[in-house]
Image 1 (tube, rainbow, N blue to C red):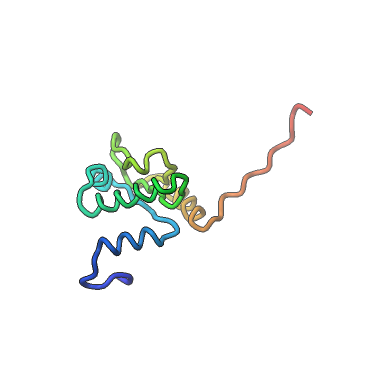
Image 2: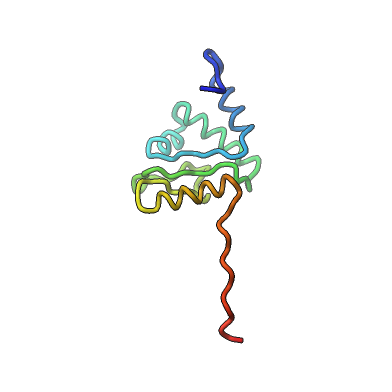
Length: 121
């Protein structure tokens, strides 16, 4: 609503937005994953863009998969499979996982606790 105007080319907008972003949250629902894997519509085009960027820089952490209530057996789009994701499905872990995502986006990881006393010394 703030970065695109009526009549503007949506594909150019998508390309520019993904290219210029520092991080991209990919919200993975059943429907999104189905469309991404089948390259259907705008989601299919977006999936093509993600795959292209990931192929150009395999070690990128730019794309963060976010799981939202995926049905068992539904897998992430191929370009995102094997990548660490945040599960923001409804449930007991939602708030904890949301905080972890915010920490990731703000580069503020959870501090590593100190190692205890070595019991073998």
